[in-house]
Image 1: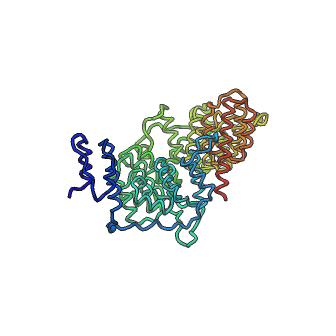
Image 2: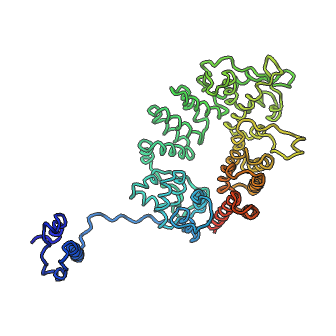
Image 3: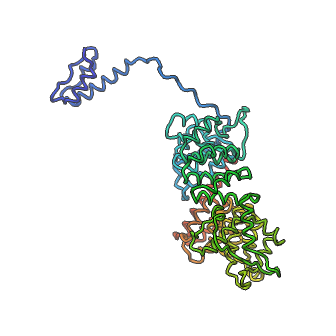
Length: 544
């Protein structure tokens, strides 16, 4: 007996004008009630009837594929309902209600970091959207993977789009602890075996290998170094360079033999990076060699009133092996280039030991050429090299001295005018404690405004302290009153949405109310105030 479905299928392929409709099936009375005056319509009706009949008669078959076990239990508390709704909004799974806000997606990293630190887990229904967001934005992955927890890893094992979860090594959070059950916290990364580490290092993508090495160095520097040494001869030069950068984590004297050997690498960039790392170890052989060169290049005058400079006359083979390029890549004179490289790689502690002077006293001395004590042409080169050294060696005393006292408004500033910071002030600021960074930057903004403050603000921890936030809001008010356009401060405004203390929302709302309606500044202040209120509510929900 022919299969009714095959007959209908053949008729549909050939066309009802070339093949007649199948006759009514006595076993299916409904087929006789089909109106056959329009063959095409009748064919569709017969197909619908046959579909229902086939489905109604289907019998369940025995399962041939084993059923996966459910995801492991997650003992962390679930997000409070308001925080879960907020996450849904940040992930774009629900509308924002028409509020005038900045790009709320830029607040997602702050939300994820806070939720992770609080030890929450997201509702299961939001985990797929969370993993999709992390797939699209790699900077979200460490927090998102930890927040997704066991369910995220369970899902990733079944969806190739989320395989990055299985390769992402999350760090332990700053707060949290064991689950209520006493088992390891889901906030911790998935445990790895030695075989898993070996496979990731040898088979993972380059970015995954760098991340794995970096995280391993934070927990077990010796193991990280051993892993790198195991494949070092076979790595590409550009890869060796970035792997060396990862050694900054947990750098110690134990790394010196490896880095000293890397000074003979065939890649000049690898040699330079190895030399820079060695220069951050004050007791290293390279640091001692650089200190000897520095003492030959700079000495205190007999009267103790000058620093006399004698820059290197040549870049010999030993200097080149220690990472100094024979030709300046910056366009500066070669002797000035060699001089700066030597000073930047010398231990800063050696200057006070050799002269008995503090950083402030050394910086107050005039600088002259060894042949002409009145020549101050080397002063900027010396200060700039000292600034590089203070950043490289993370020396807060030298960074503080090079920055000088926090700017003060007139007339106090005229009574005690300090030199402007040398080199990159933002990098020097990053060496100081967070509170001091914020205080210095707030003072700078009060005196100089926002024109040169973008990089300084970027060096400050977020969210900004209330005094720094207040200084930024006051500077924005002055900029609006001066007639400047908001887009001339677009970089700072973009940072304020994420970094201003939410407590400043009322002051920003007042600025919006005082601005001329329908102007660029009025819209900017209104949007900023709305974003601050959004962040205020967001953080309050996670604190509950």
